[in-house]
Image 1 (cartoon, rainbow, N blue to C red):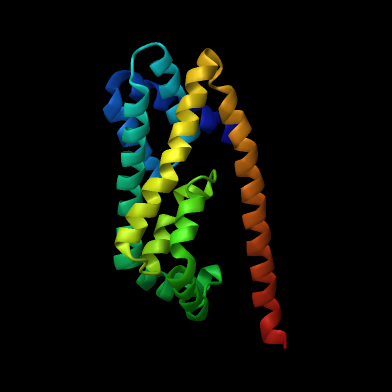
Image 2: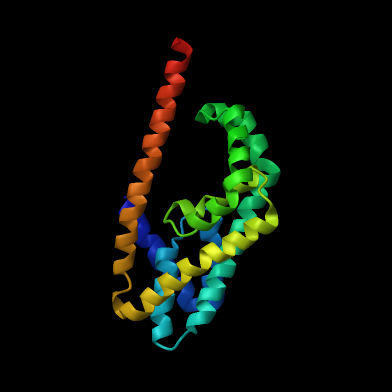
Length: 205
């Protein structure tokens, strides 16, 4: 079922880029960075493949993809900044998130937020969700924009370049990155399981 869904999303991405050109690339990358399931591991390599056919400019794709990332990331940041904390304080207990833990997240972003934003922009899966906690933690907006751009640029450059040199074999990249996403998902689930166990045991002490 999951793989069928990914196949449908991939076909939709290809259709949008073929029909809308640069705007389609920008729009899809915006959706990805707004935490919607439109993976850049399909968007940019396919666009790079088309660049190899002369339909796009390589550097224009890298810049437009990065601007799309920035636009979607800012939207998620604003959502976290103005509404995220209130929602988590009200409903976070149902997901095992206390106000104390939220305060710790605030302190983390004050000390290390810019570094986190930079490096996570180059990690599959995590890169699409990092903007919301940055907004909740009230990370400095100028730093957020700066590190989002310099973190997204090498990622988009690499994916577009790989699509360019792989040509018609660009689709092989998706399966490769999907392995990383599964590994990251397992780590996240393991962390949540540990957190759940801690919450269950705490009242017993």
